Figure 1 (cartoon, chains in turn green, blue):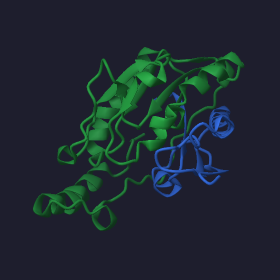
Figure 2 (cartoon, helix red, strand yellow; figure 1 turned 30 degrees about the vertical axis):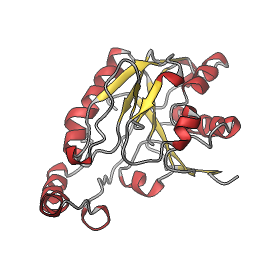
Figure 3 (spheres, rainbow over the protein chains, first blue to last red; figure 1 turned 90 degrees about the vertical axis):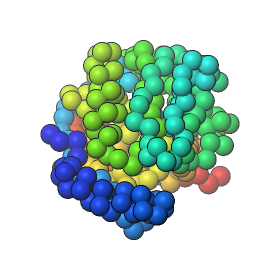
Figure 4 (tube, rainbow over the protein chains, first blue to last red; figure 1 turned 180 degrees about the horizontal axis):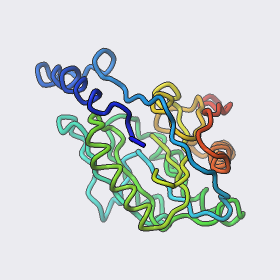
Amino acid sequence: MEILEDLKQWQAEYERGWLAHYRETGEMDWKNLYNRPKNKTAPSGSGVDLSQSRLMFISTAGGYLREDQEPFSTNRADLGDYSIRRFPSSTPLEALAFAHVAYDHTAVEEDPQVLIPLRHLEDMVSEGVIGEVAPSAISFCGWQPDVVRTINETIPAIVEAAKAEEVDAALLVPA
Amino acid sequence: MEGIATTLTTWNAGVTRLTAPPRGTFTKLARGATVGKPHDVAQQRRVLEATLALLAQDAPIDMVRLNESAEE
């Protein structure tokens, strides 16, 4: 199953619409020119018994290890940062910083669990709701205008990490 | 995601629905605080529990509305 149906059509519209306008004017016209990715058919798949499953946490909040990892680019002229960061799910939340251009960081800096609820997930493991949390959490910056790059760069890196850690399920929390 | 059961929660149901996710919940929480208000542990847990509970179901399913908002 394709991640995005009609990817070539999306790319053509993006390049001749939003991207061309940005290159000509420097303006990012999300309202009138950006073609939101659309699918008609949702993926199918079997459910899982979460109490017997390994769950990977995935965030678009732009979180990274403040002391050990490079921040995501927040230069809008880069048109997005398509890399990912892996950090241990046991990371103290105060060790995280956030690099993202599209949301106010006030809430997440006050309480990181509003976007990175890893301590809650650990509690749910202790309670038997979740079998286990995968060793790594995955983070990327969700401000990614170019869906082609998301599909070709970001998603394969996430899938590779998920397979390497043999996860059964994933929770995505967009920012 | 290639044989891995996935779920999500979002405050932005409109844009998320367009992508046809296999499972998910939506709320009236705020951008930058998707799981709940800061330090509102009970709300954060409700959102997580409801979202994760969807993993038991075969996909695809309709997105589920949660009565959670950023208002006090």
